[in-house]
Image 1 (cartoon, rainbow, N blue to C red):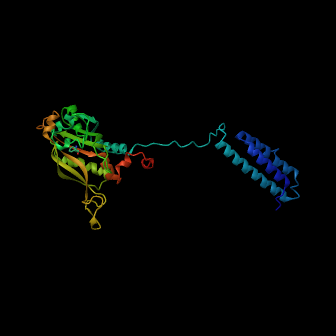
Image 2: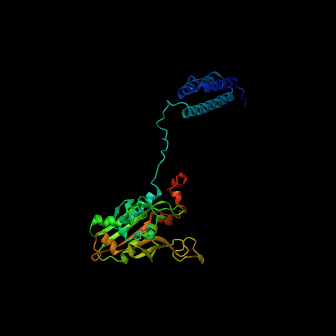
Image 3: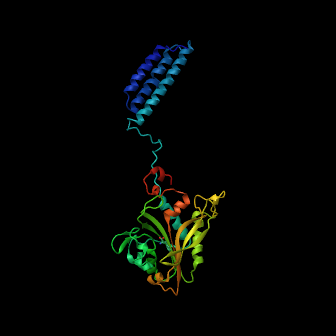
Amino acid sequence: MGTNLKEATEIKLALAKDLKSSQSSAEVDILQTKYLGKQGLINRLFKTLPIKTDPQIGRQINDLKKFVETRLQEKLTSVLTTTDKTHFDVTTPGLPIPQGSLHLITQAIEEIESIFLHLGFVRRRYPEVDTDWYYAEGLNIPKDHPARDDQETFYLSDTTVLTAHTSNGQLHEMELKKAPPIKMINIGKTYRRQLDATHTPMFHQFEGLVVDQGLNITHLLGITDYFAKSYFGPDRRTRLRPHHFQFTEPSFEIDISCEVCRGTGLIDNLACKVCKSGWLELGGAGMVHPQVLKNGGLNPTECSGFAFGWGVERVLMMKTGLPDLRLIYGDDLRFLNQF
Ligand code: PHE
């Protein structure tokens, strides 16, 4: 097939020159008419060259036409995306707007809150900076008690602290309500002098307080079990382990059965690597100490109560298997964008 159609070569050369000097879509439009329009250069070839007698010529002009079309289209795309700001194509899809999402901890807090709201709890927030009375003295923690250790606690002055637990909310709630029934979930920030893979200086706790007539440990267990099944899954179980807190009597640590070994502590006859014993520690709980009820203005002969205080980061790590808390509070968007 002959490719030496003189006119085709001339048109290609002219086109190259024209493309080089066009900077806008309007200029490309003009070239479109010049080359491909009814009266354009290509059509003129169809009319003037002997295509009837030599079908090769017709084919070559068609090839040339395709070539010109492609080059003009390329040029149009390139001016639109680079230099030509005057052209606005309303049909072009918009640029995606980067979407934010709630932080992992906020999501966990919302989930925890909704579980307790289902049980009729009221959500509360109490001060993160509080006085010695609410934070310690009123909770039966005397001046010389190790829980006052300033190795652990951020003291702001002799009598004010950054709260190291949310239990200060217990006395505030009793003062606010003045009488049972009380059923609150206080979720807030807490502070301790600590920093490693599973502890940060600022973290969150959710503190439950229920006070009414005739409450006992089985009520506490019922709530604990409901929370474990709702948050972690229906096969999870809970257990109480004796413990000591100044503001509850009796006091417990609550454990949740390990998901991996299903509470047996064994996987293929070897110790489960996740929990070692079949159980994972959730946090502290107990029956409210009568002295604390008195300190909150309630009469311990007329009512009783239970309380618990668990870590938001802790339950989140237990649920997700997240290995290092510092990821949560870091600024690595590759991690944070996944949630
Ligand atoms: N305040 C305790 C802690 O931070 C937890 C707790 C809360 C224990 C309520 C008993 C009752 O470890």
